[in-house]
Image (cartoon, rainbow, N blue to C red; front, side, top):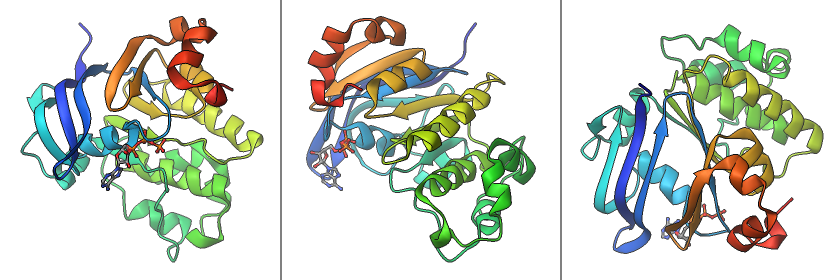
Length: 237
Ligand SMILES: Nc1ncnc2c1ncn2[C@@H]1O[C@H](COP(=O)(O)OP(=O)(O)OP(=O)(O)O)[C@@H](O)[C@H]1O
């Protein structure tokens, strides 16, 4: 039977008294990739940071590998396998590529060598400081840093944003390799809806903090009108 890695039931959450997410129910299975779509400001990042324990939960539950994690602080969630690649990348500018990776390393199948194998560009730039990297290299480093923490679930917040097409292609290739083992689950927040749908099995669309569509990614990919009405024409690539 497929293992349910994440399960959200009727989750209401936000910032202090401000409620952003309302009655969000979704799940992610082992090895599955889920696209989290929606217009700007609908609560996608808030959903990821709520999974990491950084926001106020007003109701509902989050289960991770079968356990209710409400009482788990953020560092425990990270240690237990919830790995975020933040939208701002947040790499250490004054540390080298290699230092950025080693500070995040934990025992597991993801090692420095494996990260360098996934992103040969990082191996070439291992002695460069964080601030010396291009946007694409920074994104590779942000992903590598999350992977070397050996996550069970990788939460990617708009990883392709602002990158040149050639870099997007390299990241898409890496995304495919990440999925080969079948062990890692992925939640992909992305403005490029069609690309996200191509890379995932299932999708959830949020609007003003609520789920307005949920189903198989190919179904939404094959229905441009529905996609446009859910996400907005300007975001459809
Ligand atoms: N730290 C915060 N304190 C209060 N409100 C916040 C905070 N961060 C975000 N919000 C609000 O929460 C709502 C959802 O924002 P969120 O960043 O989750 O949306 P998003 O779908 O990820 O958008 P984007 O695509 O622009 O990143 C917005 O109304 C935003 O203004």
